[in-house]
Length: 126
Picture 1 (cartoon, rainbow, N blue to C red):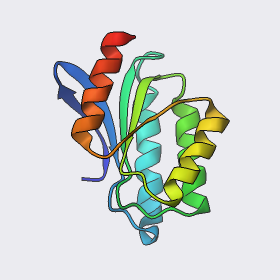
Picture 2 (cartoon, rainbow, N blue to C red; picture 1 turned 180 degrees about the vertical axis):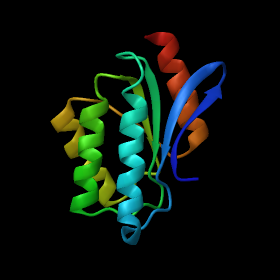
Picture 3 (cartoon, one colour; picture 1 turned 135 degrees about the horizontal axis):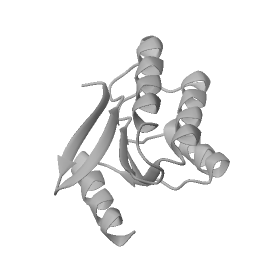
Picture 4 (cartoon, one colour; picture 1 turned 30 degrees about the vertical axis):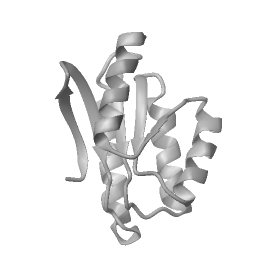
């Protein structure tokens, strides 16, 4: 289910950008979902968003990496805590670069469940 959606988990609102399974041939769809996510996230107050970005089995190249860097930079002022699901291989290198450019930290998770639990815990701590 690619796109941005809101979920409730343990009485907490979490936004999720699901890009899982999109291949490099789906680049326009990828960009469209990221742009919609940026618009959605910018409607929230500063430092209020609990965010999951699911990139499991998603194709990455320099163009999609740049889109993700712009996404992370754009969302920095809105995000309270952020988790990324399904990172692997070259995506890990891209994430390290994005972290250094934006100054943001991300929890790297293997599953949606783990990401949701971590975000709820962070929200209670912060």
